[in-house]
Amino acid sequence: MFSVIIPTFNNIDYLKICLKSLKKNSKFDNEIILHVNEGIDGTLDFVKKNKINYSHSHQNIGLCSSVNIAAEKISTDYIIYGHDDMYFCPDWDVAFEEEINKIGHNFFYLSGTMIQPLNGHIQLNCGKTHSDFDEKKLLSEYKSLNYHDFQGTHWSPHLIHKNVWNSVGGLSEEFNPGIGSDPDLNMKLWKKNVRIFKGLSNSRVYHFGSISLRKKKSLKRNRGSKIFLKKWGISVSFFLKYYLNGSEYEFNKCIITKKYTGPLKNPKISFFYLIELLFCKLNYIYNKYF
Image (cartoon, rainbow, N blue to C red; front, side):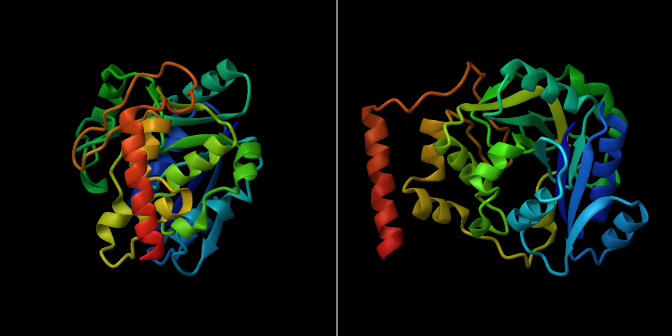
């Protein structure tokens, strides 16, 4: 049904939880493809021993390149990208399948809903690390947590039809190691006239939260917001606010989303839109020429 792409970077304890959840909680026989960066913590031996479909690089090549390489190996029509520190809750894939059937075409960007111990769309502490993960608590409570289908998603796990993915060239590798790549992908989809950016409440994952970035202090981070501004001429926040009509996010707080009301329309031109656009353009000129 789906090709699930998981990039991983020496994160074997979380990866095992992720793969176990996909095997245990998926209705369909989904294809799983990993891209292993380094794999010196035993990851490479583990995937070989368990005959998991994978690609490999001897160094960390970044999330964008990892996903793009893994995507070359897919054999289904739908690409799902997720993190190696996500636990996929039961029937996560059923919600995606039902939504695809409702839409009836391929021009969409769908995502799941994240449950996190400190923030996310839904806050529920079932463990902050692999060692204190309370799977039993999660499985007993995840369905009872009220939420809604939401508008303007740019979050993972996300689902895209392979033809649409190929038409935009996958993830833009100038965003490696990855920060800012999701809004950039959304902008490329917008330019292809995709207007359905929908988060599904019934497709849920537990996300420990940027484990690779948190535990690898020496990992070089990119200036994703600056790259986005120089590429598109507007800021990420402007794009999310006026184009995707999307979520607000503050570190260590729940993500605030708007209920899904239908396909998006072009931004409404207002006084505040023009003022914020002017600031974007001034910032763009400053960053490009100074």
